[in-house]
Image 1: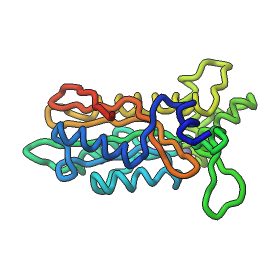
Image 2: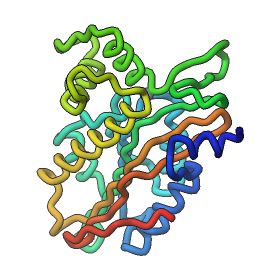
Image 3: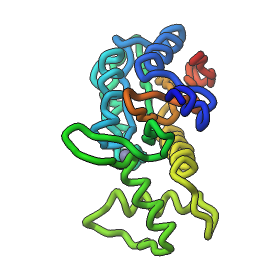
Image 4: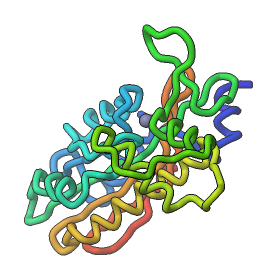
Length: 238
Ligand SMILES: [Zn+2]
């Protein structure tokens, strides 16, 4: 089975990372966003295998503000978001931001979820490690729901994601990644609503899941849209 066939098993569509960023750039350009008048911000996992996406975004949009936490969760909050906004170019009285917000999952050549290989290390590794660790705790039936000040981001992941998971049900890693995608989007949008003034700013929210295949990375697009002069416009990634 080719990896493209494996991808189809789990996702209705997927683009190479480069293709995805190019397509989103092209559709946003038609709406007045470009690398001169827009700041990009990323909210992706800290994992080094996720950073290829940041590199491509940098190549297309310039250096991007980093809103990221473990698993790509949006924990940067109002302060983080306001900082990204205040760093945006001000062109003709308008600020423009593009947010790329995506959790990630690895899939190996045998279609196994969460499994990847890393340079210089024998044997299999895991991605997203933070989500896999949380999933393992749920399967084991023991969860520490206290804030561990020596493990702040992982504590917040448990607390935040559990709100979206039916009590007693343990999602598999793909389901958990999809739940995480929806949570990242919701938390980002909730903060945008409080912080962004659409009279002064246009912005775009690009969400999906970053997928690590055995050879390269892909993106499954979830919701992708722009808000221009206060009007929401769905982006065509196709
Ligand atoms: Zn991760």
